[in-house]
Length: 107
Image (cartoon, rainbow, N blue to C red; front, side, top):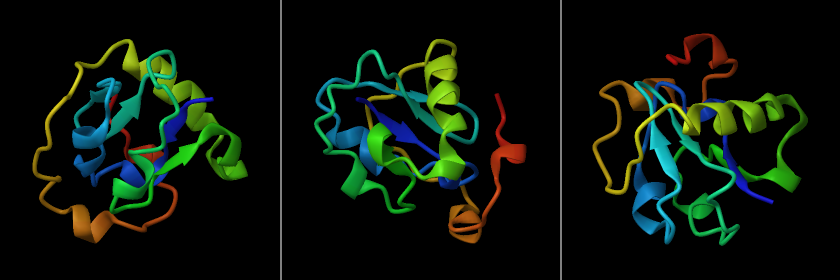
């Protein structure tokens, strides 16, 4: 089982999780991060580091977030790898916790 980045990361893109990943399995898009499920070793180090609480174990994924399994797998193959912490998006605090952000995902 892999960990999955979900809806609340969109338009926030905190990268605290990236710094603790021992296998560098995070990939960065314009306003979202994803985890490559083929690279994730299920170590769980990233989950508690996410200030937006947007990372879940695949087996604990909320029912309304299941589409992010496919989104993470797809976009990890298209986006560049990220291995160091960066500043979050400028308006991340405003977007943190807003529901239904999938429509804002920039692919």
